[in-house]
Length: 123
Length: 460
Image (cartoon, rainbow over all chains, first blue to last red; front, side, top):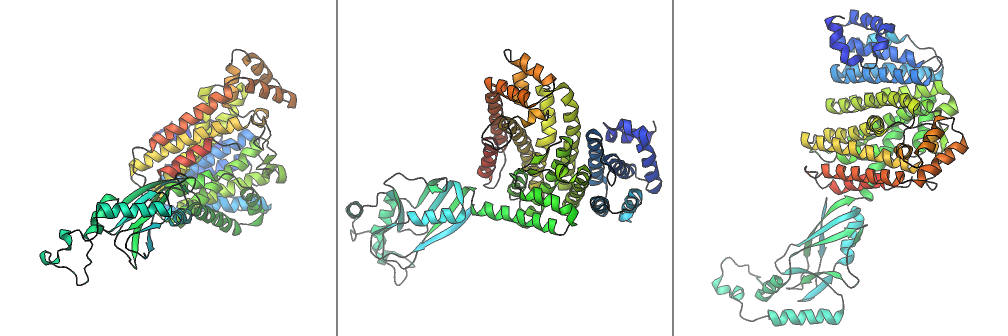
């Protein structure tokens, strides 16, 4: 495990299984965009969380939904602790858009596209 | 605290002015539920007394004052030749000053359930000793738990803010949340935000209402997902979002208000508040996972139970208290004390909820927690009971139909489990109240104590 990942380890508590199951790849995709591991992890957690929940598709079973909820909550807490206000707001708005489209059964833009744009909100 | 002046005129030299109803009006106007009224005469020849309003007795009092300090008895105060800087209209009133010395210029009266605490024959008098006077005034201050007008105003601010936020949201999202919000709920978390946001130097009721409404939306968002997880069909007497509109809609609505509430809180621009609420939300989600995992070893043990409810319930109570105080820029000691108060209160609240699940008069279905295998302290205690424990554990190990749930309920109520949990909840509330002792709360202590006690001593 790299030094960088070790720094993130406490933030992966209870989510270790997800790391090897796609969270790591998603994290690295965001890390390519922004050289701030905690923000990249926040974005990755939110993307994976939404996917786990089945937002916009078929509802996840209860236990998977709860795992998705925890990903979202942890991502949100990481943003609260480490991101500028504009980024926090952009992320929240991205989730609002995705969930309102899901509720209306309308097509939504890809989550990664929205979340990546949110990361850029501070610039 | 509420402050005002009681003003009146007097019509004779010595006069007992009954001000009882005026004080009671002030109490009602300010909405003082429990506390004290402080009165202070703003004159050196106007006293205060509590006694019987019987005309002959009042005449006796006047006679007594006259005998003890007769008018014109050669008071040095009335020797204007020996005094400096006297007004042209300076009254000859040495007797009146001396008489006031026999009375009191101030009084503190108790208030319980919005009523002055007075004996059957007691009235409160302002005693004119140098009348008649066109203008007399008493300072009046009320302190304690303000339960009516102030609270109603605060509550309506939250309701308005909730309605305002729901009004601008897309209908497929807003409609299910509106049903949930309009179905009621205790609004304890927003109440705690509002109370604690009045403690620090930056007390802004509108900002407090915004935060309180956001916290309530966040709480409701978690309930919407919970109901899907627990397969609940009804909440607050109405179908759950998952039951009425399907799990997909429930997930979307929960996510939307999770995001919106966190955005509204972030936009308030107080990093401490944002972090406090975000940490609570994370604790709630982690505890939900534990809660579901523990259903495999149902009913579990006290230690696991405490860990789960501190995350699931107490964390948001604690964050509500801390975030209100942080918003008002209260000092860190106060924030810390309120955080601990909220944690203890939230834990006690959940225990009280567990007890209510066994009450046939609560308006809820008895034994619903058992049916859904929700962690419950009375059940844990009953399962540990030497006499009924084996049967409780055996029933819980199998499938739980109405007959089994009914029998478990019967067994739990036959033990001292409910009394133990009720007592434990009350002890936690007293511990929460003690947390408030060491810090200055600007007169809000009685209200916080009232909220804590009513959260536990309830039937629904």
